[in-house]
Length: 209
Image (cartoon, rainbow, N blue to C red; front, side, top):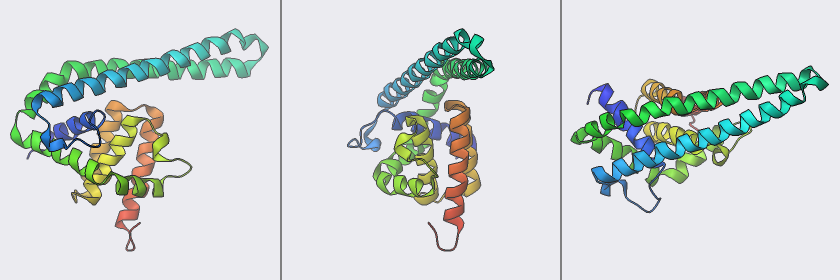
């Protein structure tokens, strides 16, 4: 399968993972199921990002009103304004994802893409407890459960490809970074990169994790 098709399969798998229940077998999903899951995931992702943007902008306004009390409040206002605008930009970028969804779904009609998407989703579902433990073992000061859902699933996909599907490390890291660039924010991308570095180092070590 071409690399572009594999990338599409990963993106579809990421969207599907956010919507299917633990009890549902991914291999039972129809093309219509993929469509509904992908739309639901994109809708939820944009809604959450807009809510966080609104919170940051509200906090920025609060600090701006207090800025006369000192430079610290003004600096806080600038930081919150930057974060709010960044999250709003993230939503705009995800709107392009909604417009691009027909391309993903057209690709999903290709049996290889659909099959690989469902293979990835099934690998995460069937091994999630082990994958989560492996990820928690290499996280510093965090637990997987504290991360946003999209960040958790990007990491789970990467871990499943490494540990279950034996995908080359370089491919796993490149694809996870591409998904993080599309679906996470600046802080999330930094955290995902750090976790992946530690996870791959643990996997490549002679003794494993």
